[in-house]
Length: 292
Ligand SMILES: Nc1ncnc2c1ncn2[C@@H]1O[C@H](COP(=O)(O)OP(=O)(O)O)[C@@H](O)[C@H]1O
Ligand SMILES: [Mg+2]
Image (cartoon, rainbow, N blue to C red):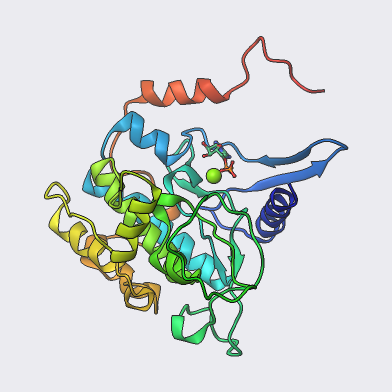
């Protein structure tokens, strides 16, 4: 229970300080004796998981559009020294204009500088990994973790399919952990499934630790190259780990204007009837009681 309260408080504090077009805006937060409320802007297209379910696998231009918005948002988070730590489609909302709104900052964390205050550029070598504060876990029964971790090491956070090898092996996070998750999201947008899938959690984690996955030929070659450069076991070797400019310059993003991408319209037209269904799901119905 305390962990859940910590998580909610963390989200409230984080979001009250963050201001970016691709980060969900928290309008207000309050509590009464029994409940804690946070009021967010509504993303009418729901989250990316549902979006992929409704629209099927995405084509290159659409993956490029969503993922470049995610990168621009990660760039902003770096300037705030924040690692999201639970980047996944269920935490990526999509508004009525198909622009992404990153949500769920419950387990996001401020990176502590290793004495060098100039760590906002994101150089992994310039920063320490975060450790020492307990946090909520949504992963259970982790096996195969190193036994000789210091007691004050970070608790497990993240979600099974998106968690990075460094988290599994030594419970360490960095900006590059979000880049690992981005690699998985890009793979998933093209294929509809995640690259690391075992018959159970332990098997999935073994595959992640060995970085063992198959690259399907349905993913365009230029995207395959990007995914391979993101899904590197060594976090420092991931493209964009030292500087996000490196990933922005990858040929997968040719033609993307990163400065304005978060405000741009999508490159393809969508079936509006599908969008309507989502809107109806979220909007209050006549029979709903409206709080006064
Ligand atoms: N602002 C929003 N607009 C539309 N849907 C949302 C919004 N915030 C959350 N959701 C939906 O609720 C789900 C859970 O929200 P999230 O903030 O991720 O909390 P949790 O900590 O429970 O994962 C999301 O995956 C999404 O489907
Ligand atoms: Mg969530």
